Image (cartoon, rainbow, N blue to C red; front, side, top):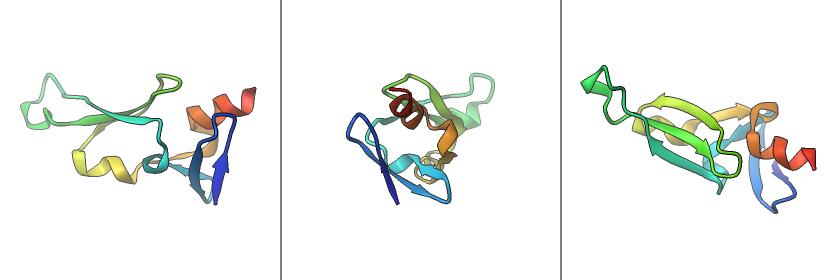
Length: 82
């Protein structure tokens, strides 16, 4: 199922979990751990609309599998407020 909101964006939702990889407003940024050289390629997912961090300290191969509960999706919550 896909949910559509005020910004005309469709986000895949399955079992009340949003699939962040389907959102055009997600951005993947570097999130290195300054105290651990081994994890200097960690990444984080941020919502471009709200600027809220969705997930952090992710390995590069984990970013496409991130899901969040519909209630925690900053974009859907912003769309439902107005």
